[in-house]
Amino acid sequence: MPAGPAAETAEAPQDPLAIVRSRGYVTLLVMAAVLGVPISAVAYGFLALVSTLQSLVYDDLPRSLGFSGTPHWWAIPVLAVSGVLVALTIRHLPGRGGHEPAEGLKTGDTPSASAVPGVALASIASLSLGVVLGPEAPLIALGGGLAVGAIRFLQRDAPPSALALIGAAGSFAAISELLGSPVLGAFLLMEASGLAGRMLGVVLVPGLLAAGIGSLIFTGLDSWTGLGTYSLSLAHVPPADRPTLAAFGWAIAAGLTASLLGEAIRRSALLLKTHVERRRMTLTVVAGVLIGALALLFTTLTGKSLSAVLYSGESTIGPLLADHAGYSVGALVLLVVLKSLAYCLSLSAFRGGPVFPALFVGGAGGLALSHLPGLDTTTGFAIGVGALSVAMLKLPMTCVLLATLLLGAQGLTVMPLVIVAVVVSYVVTLRIMRLQTLPVDGQRATGPTAP
Image (cartoon, rainbow, N blue to C red; front, side, top):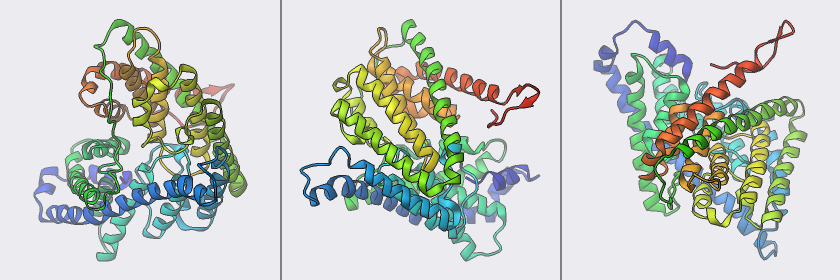
C-alpha cells in the first residue's frame, strides 16, 4: 500500500465522513470492486504457475531424465539457474525485480506498469526454483502496480490520492486468500503501511471490498480449475493445554531466543546484500548453490525431503506440524539452523517476501522447544511462529493473529502465551536495533533505526 500518498490523504483537512459521502468516493469503491476481479485472478494464476513449476522442476524433470526420484543434489544446479535468471532480471529489466526482501516487508512504492514484468519474472524465477522466500511481497507489488496502471490508462490525470486508494485496493485483492483470510491479509497491509488515524476507514473500505471480492474469485477459481486454494492453512492441529506458569516461562524464553535469531538473520542478510549488489551475477549464483547445498546436507543427514529446507514453507508448515512426531529434537534444531541460513541467503540475493519462511522457522523452533517439560506441541509451535515472525516483520498485532488464527479453535487457548512471546520478541528486537545505532567512540554506527 503506498505510504506516501496515503499519508498525504491523511493530512488533508477534509472531513472523512464528507469524503465517504461524496460521489467520487462511491466511484472509487466501484472501481476497486471491478479491478478486484481481474487482479485476484492474476494473483491466483501467479500462485498456480509457481506451484506447477515447482512440481515440474523437482518432480517431473528428474524422472524425465531417467532418475527414479529427485536426486539429493538436484537443488544445487536448479538454484544456480535461478541465480542467473534473477540476476539478469534485476540487471536488465525496469524495477530491479521489486524491492529488496532483506529490507523487510514493504508496502509502499507501488511499481509502475513497466516494472510489473520484471517483478513477476524475478519472483517466479526465485519461488518456483526453490528459493526460501514467499509470494506475498511480489503479489502486493503486482496487485498495486496493475491497479494503478489500469487507472492511469483510463484516466491519465487521476489525482495521487485516488491512485493511492486504488493501488491499495489492488494489493488487498492480490493477497486476499494467501494468509487464509481476507481480513488477515488486510490487517497485514494496514499495519505494515502504518495506516491509522481519522482517514483509516476512508482508505481501508475500498481495500476490504477488493479483498472480499478477491477471496470469492480465489474460491471460484479453485472450484473451477481444481488446482488448489494456495491459502495458508493447517489441517491437523493437536489439542493445546491451558496456559500454565511453566508455559509462561517458555513463552518468555521463546521471545528472547527468537529476537536474537531474527536479528542475526536480518543483519547477516543486509551485510551479504551489500556484497551481492557489487557482483550481482556471480554472488547470486553462489547464493543459489549454497541454498541447494544446505538442502542437500539436511536430506542427507535426516532422510527428510529437500522441500523442508527449500521454498517458503507455506505448503510445508502444515505437514511439519502434522508429522511432528517423525522429527527428533536434533532434526528440528538442524532444520532451524539450515533453513535460517538458506533464508538469510535468499533475503540477500533473490526476490520474494519474508513472511512465510519466518513462520516456518519459528514453528520448527517451537516444536523443538515443545520437547521440554511443561510445554505442549501446539503451544510451542504457536509461540515459535509468533515470536520469530515479529522479530522479522516488526508487526506485533499481525503476528499474534497469524500465530493464532491458523490454529482454529486451539488458537484461543494459546493466544495469551503467543501474546507474551510476541511482546517479548518485539521489545527485545527493537532494543537490539537501537543498540546498533548508538554512538560508538563519538560516532554513530550505521544500520537501520528502530521505530
